[in-house]
Structures are given as C-alpha cells and as structure tokens.
Image (cartoon, rainbow, N blue to C red; front, side):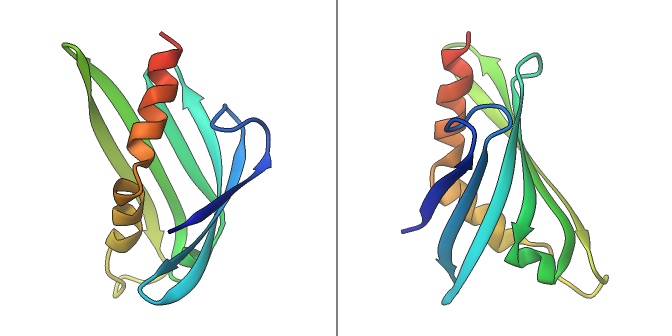
Amino acid sequence: MPQVDLHEGDWGDHGSIKVWTRVLEGKVETYKEKITIDEENKAVHLKALEVDVFEFYESYNIIFQFIPKGETNVVKTTLEYGKQNEDLPPPDKYMNFFLVNRLVKDVDAKLVQGQ
C-alpha cells in the first residue's frame, strides 16, 4: 500500500504538495506532486516535481477533469509526458497506479464539495 505525506499546504487544496512513496514493480519509488485546482473547468492538475519517473521522462503531469453527467461525473484523464528518447514506452504503469489507488474518487469528492 502506498504512503502519502503532506509536504506543504492543506490536504488536497490548490497549491498543496504531497510526496508519495510506493512499491511499483518491486522497486520503491517516490513521487512529489503539486496540486492545482481549476474550479471553473472542474479539473485537477497533478504536476510532478520530483519523481523517479524523471529517470526516463522529462515531464509528467496528470489532469483529471470532472464532467457532470446527471447525478454523477464522467472523469476525463489526461497524461502529459515528454520522453527523454523516442525508444521509451509510454508511462502506463504510473497511470495505473493513480487509478487503482482511488485518487480519482478523492479528487472528485473535493470538487463536488465546492459546488
């Protein structure tokens, strides 16, 4: 199970910084992210600040946009990344981490709370 620590700001708020520690494919990795909330577009941007993925990728950012649909929200997830070289595969294993660990649900709850 991953461990997440608040490094700066208030939990889940705009500008807050979290540090994740997790085991991914048998290797302990850290991921430091800054959260930016775009309330007008119901979107949350997770910008990687310091992360083991930078060994292979120049940038790594995730955007969750929550689109109201009836009583629920549809989540559009965008992964923006820049490869250090074209031979590298897309960073799918990192995307799976966020989806499996229910980050989408936590972020959605925060946006719904602001309605």
